[in-house]
Length: 389
Ligand code: UD1
Ligand code: UDP
Image (cartoon, rainbow, N blue to C red; front, side):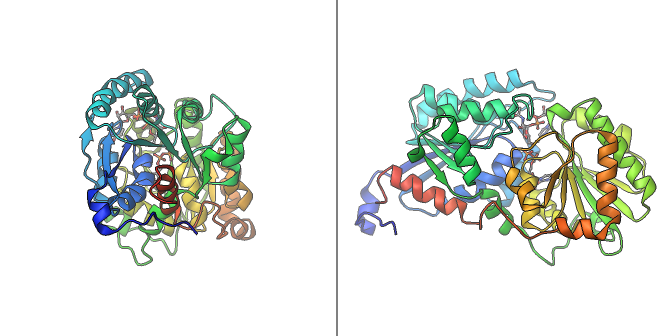
């Protein structure tokens, strides 16, 4: 059992508060950092400072609104059609003055986006310790997911504290030479966020979603956005989906399309104008998580959704060649099916028409924690800074 130093309320008032700066920029980072920020905001010993790069804009702002987070710094870097180089240079230049002005005691980054890596690098340049939330995920393939596998490895090289969701993630870091004392197995904060968001009687505000018959139809939620799937792979995935709806009149697809113009264009071209396919704007996190909870099946290349679906007992087919989330595959709810059209059609058909296969994958095994990851991370941070014994 860990104990606080003998701090009285008076001590806490006069002591220098620990300045924790969280830096993030995209939708998934915001969803997974929000519970930790909310926890830090509750603590008298901590001054929580939020810096967003706004690598994403609308998709980020909607999460901030749900979790009532008001950023202290907003680099506002998003440009339409931005390249990885654009993001890297704009974030690196923007963060320097923020860190110099604010002088945090520690910077927290999350996951594997370009914001993550560059924020960690900027912190390193200013000699500020870095805490990496969701550390140690590895696909073992530098080109997939691209550029995330490299981003996460580089971030691991820069971080002083590594918050690994699972034992597998811990082991990946140890194999790369990171000292065990610096790695903390905490579960994934995505479960903290999910548990705060799911409501069994949830009613959508979106009219199109409220009209969908979740009881009598098989509703498949899909999302596809990864860079390595842009172009032909995405065309093949969409083509497989068209074949599925043509063969199964009781199936409807709900696809909240990522705001990336490249993806919107392809999705509209291949999947537009089909009554069984609902192409909609990205949903705010609350309706999206509740949509997952009502879905029959999920088809995705997303990382975060692979962690959420097992917690919701939803079978999930991953249209990628590998995953950095093998725990969910072992748990039986996630199947990695590749990006070949025929394979996608066959795997979807099986889950739509074979009750046993469906039941086998609808398991309530959740390898990503019990919703207390933020608390665990916070405790380790307080120990590191000698506020907790
Ligand atoms: C980024 C991350 C990826 C993460 C994904 C989560 C990188 C290189 N990629 O990919 O790791 O899995 O976010 O979704 O860090 N756009 C908007 N509004 C928004 C968000 C995006 O209009 O709120 C459009 C813009 O035109 C932008 C484009 O989408 O230029 C691409 O955004 P970007 O962050 O570069 O890539 P993602 O594909 O979103
Ligand atoms: N998500 C959302 N609205 C949507 C689609 C996804 O809120 O319309 C959430 C989803 O629940 C998950 C996160 O966004 O928590 C995943 O983000 P994304 O797939 O963009 O990124 P990745 O996890 O692949 O990095």
